[in-house]
Length: 116
Image 1 (cartoon, rainbow, N blue to C red):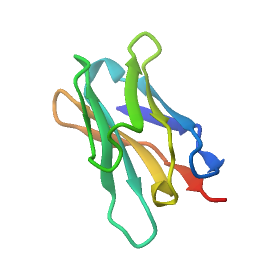
Image 2: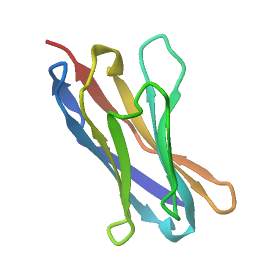
Image 3: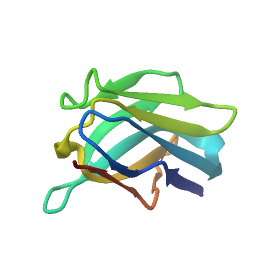
């Protein structure tokens, strides 16, 4: 079992920045990759960025060049640095982990609102 706790969401003006954190506990040594997803009202949950245990990253086209995913293995934490935020980035952001056995875990989500 892996537990994920997100933090760092909030209200920010367009063009501003936020950093989300996702702390893993439990059997976190079994994690193969971790990622950030988001879901806006009326929309399906979509991939934002993922990072593998080896450090390989992948981003949605809509956030490339603005968002950066990184990980701290010692702290068992994954971060999402979000810059140049736009109103369309408004959503609940979820952290997800996938273990080497294929087990999937989700965090509870953190709200990000981009508005003037």
